[in-house]
Image (cartoon, rainbow, N blue to C red; front, side):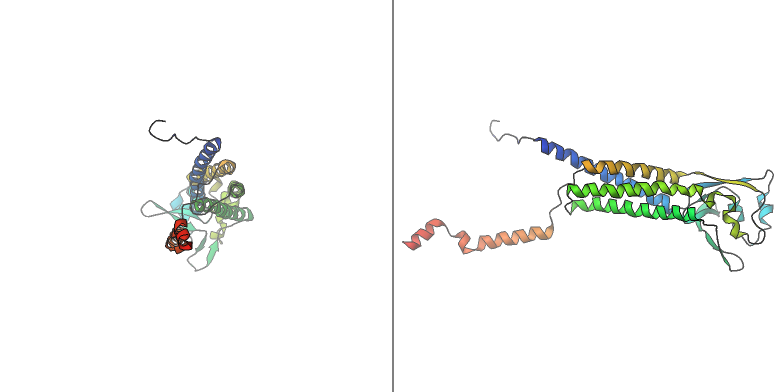
Length: 268
C-alpha cells in the first residue's frame, strides 16, 4: 500500500472470535427475553383462563344472593384468570386485579382454596425456572466486567437446560385442582359448591403463551452457549490507575532515566 502501512491480515481465528462474540450478544438478548417471559408468567394471576360452564338459564345475581359469606361470588361464576399466587376478580369499574387464594369471610375465618400437590409442584417449578433463568442472565451480564472462560460458557448451558426443564413442567398447572370444579369449594363450607356449575376447564392465556416462549428460548440458549465467545472485559478503573502509578514511578526512578553513556563518563 503506497504512503502507508498495509492493513493487518484477518486470520481465521479472528473471524471465528468475531462470529463467537456476535453469538454471545444474541445469546444475551435471547436470555433477557426468556427471563422476562418467565417472570411475567409466574408472577401475574392469569397463567391460564379458567372457563366456567353454568347450567342453561342460570341467573348469577340470584344465585350469589344465597352465598352472602363470599363477596366475590359473581367473579367465581364467570370466566376468570388463575395463576400461581392468586386469581383475577373485577372491581369497579371493569378493572382486573389479583386476589389471593386465601381469603377472610364475613365471620373472620380464613379459607384457602384446594391447593393440591400438583398445583404446589407447578408453583415450585415456576420458582425454580425463575431462579436458574436469572442465574444464567446475570452470569452472562457479568461477562462485561469479569472474564468468563469458554469452559464456563458450556457450564452456563446447564443452567439454561435446567430452566428449560422446570419451565416446561409448570404446565402441570393444567392438571391440578385449579382446573376442576371443586377448587373453590372451601369458600362454601355450608352450602357447598353451587350445583349450577356444570363443568370447569382451563385454556391457555397470554401469560401461558409467554411461558411457552420462555421454554423455547431456554432450549435455544442452551444450544448457543457452546459457540458463544464472551467479549473482552472492560478495563477496570482501579487497575488503570495502578498501572499509571507504576509507570510514573518507573519514569521518576533515577536508574531508569540514567543512560549508558552517563555511566561510562562517571567510570572514566
